[in-house]
Length: 422
Image (cartoon, rainbow, N blue to C red):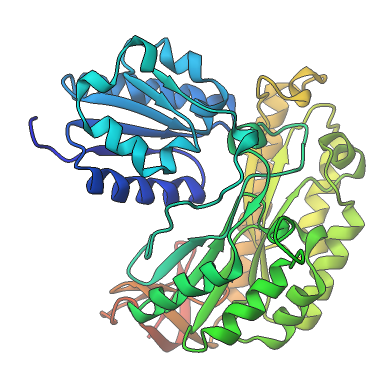
C-alpha cells in the first residue's frame, strides 16, 4: 500500500463533513500516506458503536495503514478508542484542524508511540474557529462555509458541547472574503453552517447577530445568487435575520429548525429555550414575511417521561407550524447526559411513535409536492438531471441540464418524492 493517499471515513453532521474536507487538504499538504482517518460522531450511543464497528472493518481492509481516530466521539471518549487494538492515534477536534498535527503524523510511524496515542486537549479552552478554512466543500453547485463552532447551551440529551467546546464565531470579514472566492470559482449557492448557528457573533466585538452577517454577505457579495442558512434555533432568530427573510430574495426561503418536541413539559425537561407557542409564532411570522417559506425540523421521539398525550402535542406541531421536511430521531440514551438518568420510554413505544411521525411527515411532503404542480421555479442543478428549488425540493429532469447552473423550469408532476420538470 506504499504511496497510497489517506482514506477518510466520516460520521455525523454536515460540519463533520466540512471538517473532513479540511483534513483532506491538510493531510495532502503534509504529504501523509498510508493512513485511514475516522471522523467520529458522538450524538448518540449508536453513533459511537457504529464508529467502533467501522474502525474494526477498516483495520481488516487496511492491515498496513495507520488508523487515526478523531471527531466528537474521540474528543469525549478518547481512552475508549485508544484502548482499541486497531487504533494507532486519537486526536481531538481542535488538533484535527491544525497543520502541525498532520505534519507530525506524516513524519512516519515513529511519531506514534505509546505515549503519543492520545492527543486530545481540553476543548473548552479552545477559542479559535475554523483555523483551516477551505474554499469549496460540497458539490460543484453548492458550497458550505463554516461560520461558527461549539455551543454554550446544555440540552439534557446532548453531549455535543463536550465534543465541540463553547461557541466561537468566524469574523464576518473572513466569511465574506471566503464567499467572494467561492463565487469567483463559479459557485451559485453558499450554505452557512455551524453547531449553533444563531449564536454566531456573541463572542465577537460589538456582539453582531446572524442576521447582521447575512445582510453583510448579501451586500458585499452582490454576485452571489443564493445564500442559505442551515439549522437554526428559532428562539434566537434576531430582527435583522427576520428583515432579511422579508427583504432579501437571494436568501433562500427554507429554514431547518431545531424544535425537538411539541410538548412544553418535554421541552422544559430537555432544557430547551423555547415553548411550543414560540415555535408556532416564529413559523407564522416567517411565513407572513415570506409566503413561499418552507420549514424542516429536527424532532426527538420518545424522550424520557414522554407520554402518549405529550407525543400527540408533537404530532399536532407539524400542522400548527406548517412543517414540511421532518428529521425524526428516536430517542436513545447518551451516557454522560442528564436525560440518560431520567425514566426511559419503552423502546417499542418509541419505534411506534417514530413511525407515526414519519408517516405524517410523508403526508406533508406529498402535500407540498402537489402544491407545486404547474408552478415555475428557479432550480440549482446538482447533477445533469437533478436540482433543487429555492425551498430545497428535489426536481428531476428527463434531459440533461448544465450542472451547477440555475435553470428556470415548470413543474409537471412528481415521482418517488421528487418533483418533475421540463
